Image 1 (cartoon, helix red, strand yellow):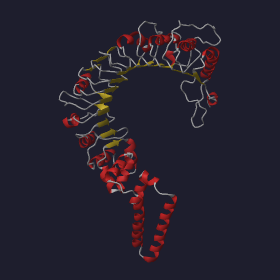
Image 2: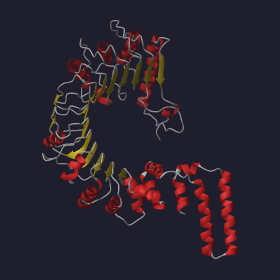
Image 3: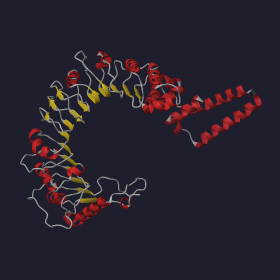
Image 4: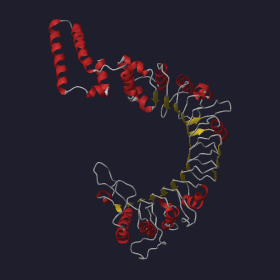
Length: 512
């Protein structure tokens, strides 16, 4: 039975052997079984049958070195790897030296349901039978109760010098990560550290984290001073991700972080000040309305992502003066009240621009979509433009059925832009004018997509459900398609591909 179970676990075993070979094996087993009935006792029959079956199965198992089988074992999902270890001594040795362990509800709960072991007992059993040196440990306790004492014990067993990646998510804000977790030995090997949903209080006695390159703190109770203490000991840090750390009001990034290239800050309410002195920051992602942001030296800044109110106006007015070498710019606005200004400042190296004007507030009549042409005039190297606009409750003047006069800008040939994608395209006059302006000036344009269904799948494919849309949205979509046919299609050069995404027949079905 051990060999039969092992055969089911190994893809190589499943792939090997023809139908004829399998039928032949079964015939031999049947013949042995009938012969044993005539010759000997049931025990002898079972023994002989098993022996013959083992010989047959061994013939189909490749005789490979143990390190190759260990590699095959390491590629299995954790649960399959554990099952294989139960039926193979070789895999049991490999299991006890697994370099990566993921212990969460997906890997533990199914097994616990079939036994009387608690989550604490199961994790403790796995780690105490482990004899290797872990390279990566993921311990996520969503919906799994484990006491503080047991968790401390587990970390003491598993986190040892040599570990390179550690993800610790206790899902208990009161749990305080032991100060000894990042001891000197661990600090010399850890490269990626992710901590979430707990309390973390690093102190000045924390040893150097010489190899730490990525730090991710998610909903962690840690103050600004404590984080600064941690950062001052991680001089090789390259990526810093901070989400929902509500005790931090003043975030200071010390100049000692000479390698820090990526800073991602998301979802804070109490953060008031961001002060960066890291000299080589090139990627900056900010989600939230932070009153004071000081990024220091920004010559290396190339890929900022900003999410806040009136961010489009802010980006056009301020960024060309403080971020001279931008290559990619992603803007998401919760509310855009002020139209984009036409200014002489330039984004000389900007190649990719993405603007997302979210939901109802962004589509108020006070905002003029046509003013976005300012980015085209300011970005001579722009290659792609992606614009997502609100379609619900469209309050702008429509280009359909109104004045036929469309505004134009002075001719200004743009020689680099190749692709334009507008998601949520409506019949708003300013939006139609923006498209016409791009067509008239973008001499290198290759394709344009006008998506009237706001990125929703409308392929008519029965395997992909398509939800019916409201009558109001369908009416505006109909006007958008009419605007394309009446105001835009005849302006398309023959060298440019136009893709218009319209609702399928399922979208017209009334909700039940």
